[in-house]
Length: 120
Image 1 (tube, one colour):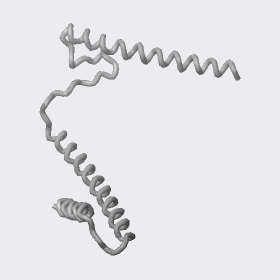
Image 2 (cartoon, helix red, strand yellow):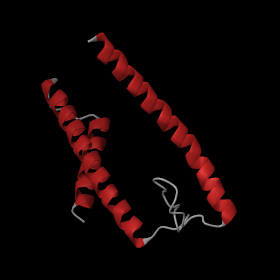
Image 3 (tube, rainbow, N blue to C red):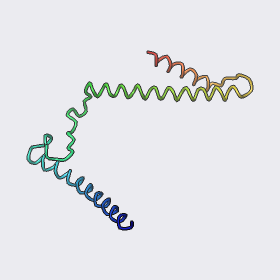
Image 4 (cartoon, helix red, strand yellow):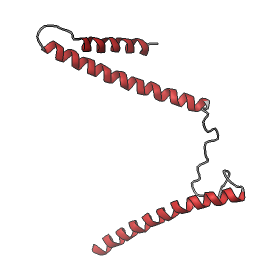
């Protein structure tokens, strides 16, 4: 049992060293391709990722993906605001009377505005 465990530790260490070596060579390979004029169309480099063909410019596909991400983010934000407003309303109701502080009123108005914008 101990021999197998030592063997697996050695194999894991070997794999780790190989990955470090390959990562170090990846930069050298890319530099070599630049020197011989094969960059960025190099087919010899392992797992070569071509650089962005439109740096600083957003393509339609990138824009659509960004818009989808914004929609998802916005929905998560609104859910959080609803939870916060519900908690504030619950806390306010448990106190004496139905006095609404300016802060709670402001949060309620913000939730209403966000709900209105969500329907747009």
